[in-house]
Image 1: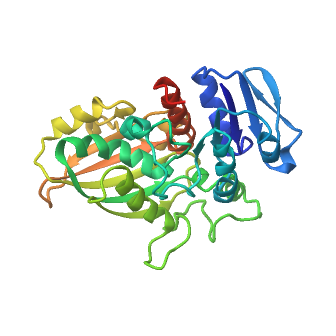
Image 2: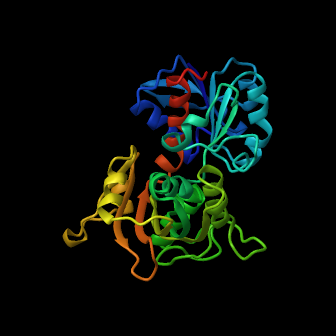
Length: 328
């Protein structure tokens, strides 16, 4: 398997390398790709050095799968060029997500939609992935009607510059800022740009991507908040179902779902936290309780490592799905 990683020097690119190594992914040739300023440098993978090349150079090579994590503009221009050369592209940017011609995939949930004809496959937004992982099994059994989600998103969801801002502020270093305000000892009800309807792009991603992956009839409304946590997104989710349920049923279904780990013993102070999700591939769910103000409604708390299942892990899992199901 000849595999390229586009954006290999970024946070998600480096995490992809780590996930590939942990999974002992069968790679005959690793092709690290980054911007011109990184070309000629090397990255280490499984004890071997690999020279970083440019996008122009990768087009001259035969590549089976390319994992993109280099931003919208790079994906917009270069994903189709590689796809034209019979390379399967799995893209982490937001560019292809809502395009009707391309599928938005969480392998455990809708991997069965993939075919050999899918040359560009979109990876959902990090906060959407962990939400969908919990909603999907509940929707299958009880039919999800409405979702109200508030997210508490770490700074690495923004990127390296934001992580550096938090670190600089903790150490009282005056430096360039990624956010309009201090993030250290603060929270910002502002993830991505604001749109004309008053919601941010991040909030609308949660709405639109959930509808595309799961069901267009589900109502989803979101508030996305940036918090001074380095890694790990958390979500407080209120879910209204069409059918009646018992809490033990909910816990049983979630426990039986691949990729989900239930941690739900509040009396013993056991519940998911970002610090416990670090470098983990699962989505963690707890604080499962009935909403006593609304019929057929429950509240849950969902946590995941945004760089792993929210990005790198899901990307690699899509590649694994293609290979394991003879879709290459």
